[in-house]
Length: 188
Image (tube, rainbow, N blue to C red):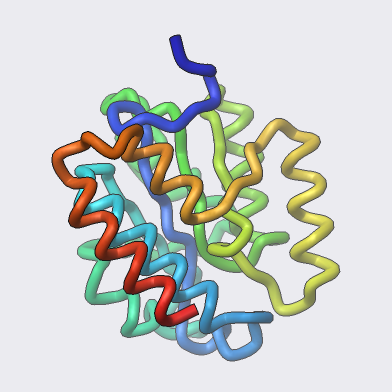
């Protein structure tokens, strides 16, 4: 029997939030964050974990950064801070029984937090890999993580997330995932 907070392939999804061109240069440790988000997306696709993405007011903030845009097929735009306002997003997660949602993107204290709180209110389990979210100011990032943890979001890391999805070294895609891990180690 596994702990109820343990991520599994059958009930997880990844939501990439608003990693857009005009805001990214202002985000603390942005390059590392983008590499970790790319790692999460690549691992999720390899392991058949659904990936969804959003863009906050792309007319003003620009499109998703090229490093991630090519990995993300659809990126509906929004003006609400919470991704739960995107038509169909929550319904699709519920229909697919994807009750554990990993959030990555920007900003930790705005769109990530609003989305997390709204998902928690709808009885989803929310996972925040700290190395795959960011804010302009570290104080906002850190305080948002504290608040989210108190609200019952699970604070984790990108690599922990991926290995929880994998489950064991006898998984048929373990070797392919190991390549992603090794590539990530070279770039961080």
